[in-house]
Image (cartoon, rainbow, N blue to C red; front, side, top):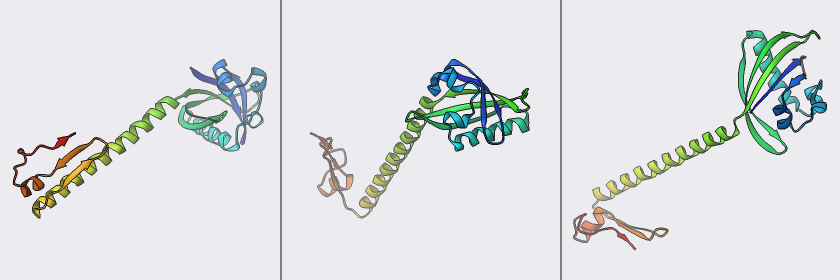
Length: 178
């Protein structure tokens, strides 16, 4: 569901003129709490107000819709919102009037963060694997071998150099899974 509404702006505040029921539910307010109220009076922080005013001004100056995303905390919950604002015209009050449409994209944001973390972990695993191959090559060059035991999986690994030290070819002595 989309949060939608119409506002008027001054240099330092935002007047709520119209809003849909989804906006009221998201903000946990009744119509009486938001109708004709200034953003500063309904609890928006000065930073949030300035963030919105900056985008309203950009829309006014460019005469184009402006899209932005931001983090919003409500009732202790962090939400990621994607917003589009558009200059509508000058209201009867003489103030600039704008429409807004906002979508809660928290789930998409969380999935993107998880994807980034998974990519970092995969990169680290690939790097560790490459480093292990490099170490194995170094040990083979100096005719040394090594044995490794993964306690968590109870697997034993014998490097090809270790097998040669014991007189076996790499394929003659299998790695052991207990």
